[in-house]
Image 1 (cartoon, helix red, strand yellow):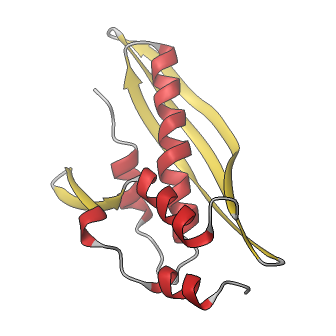
Image 2: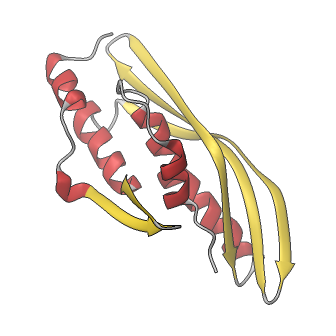
Length: 147
């Protein structure tokens, strides 16, 4: 791989604890890094012009209007590409997410934003490290049932 020694050190470094957040879900404390921070770290480590992400697929697989709110479930996949010299490193992240909102448009916008900035990006960026992420915990944080 064509990553520099400096990039490799940064990729292997522990996260600064001030960027690790927690939340409670179903009696469990979940740790996470917000999507904005993952993006800022990718810019810092790889350079703004040396990586990109794109949504490969996003599909609404279920929706329902009930009791004055609208609920929807999406599946999606995001691809991260890092250019390291002449080498391109490609990682993908995918899964499902559910949200509720007052209108159909708000529910769909919320789901797309969650995918684009959070769950898929975090999953795809995390796959550049040797640890395997706890995808269930990431899913519970990024895609809680919204009521």
